[in-house]
Length: 396
Image (cartoon, rainbow, N blue to C red; front, side):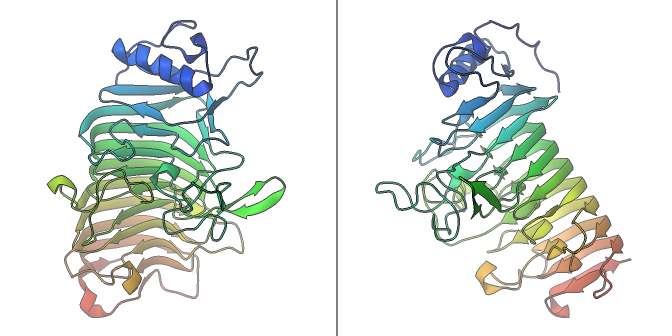
């Protein structure tokens, strides 16, 4: 991907050029850059009379319209304790908008050390099933007028209904929920992401639980995407492809929802397909899964390649599974009809987990090979559902 030349220091497209809060300065630079058809380049913050900080402290998400490139050039961007919002999201995701118009060609590129970091005292963490202060930390717990459950604003980077995108070379620390989540996104790539979260953090000297800290999530309608070089540790699944079907629908952008887009959105295809995942090295510090595949409610997941996974769990610790496919738990929709989850190729996996490759639902017309299983208590490939839920599996 080619980019326009980087800006010179002191130009209007540089946030250091502007006055105001850090979020206001970045927004002003974004307007100048995008109006000129240039990338928005965010370098390190220059210390000034307001603060000696060299990192940016933002109160609201950086919004990216169509044909936008964001370059994070050796900078650190941190959520402020006032912020209850994403780091970055596609500009078509507006709270209460009701719709999410299609956008094209959005690119997020880190140069050198590009770090996104959660707040010191997050107002909210976790998904919409978690109550603040009861199951997951949130400084808004018990505050009148503030939502008492997490929602899509806790996602780190959120792109929805975007065709032609890339995310590359970022470190994401202590995300408030899923670090990166894609919904109905097609024709893109995600490369060289490193995650650092553990499902808990220290707030004012006390350890607090922070749930649902997945690394990279692909949701309903994601197709034709390359994922390459994902590393680090997360509080929940490191990489998850989860297409959860539902008879319920609702407008886009409702607060109180974990995902921005509803099921059956504007007739868009919900199938997850054409996904290539390569070079994953990491683990779930929360003991969940390194790579998770889950489709329910009649949504198909097909044509998936996972090539290269190294489990980096520490000695004496085992994740539930290095790779998990499907689920037999009725709470997750139960076993999918045979054929809805199909055409998987899973190769070159090194596992230290309780299960190396766990087929917990149905799987058809697929190949699993070259699994190095370091847990002598189980086979390399295990099943939580009966033989009637598999067909034409090539296990080598």
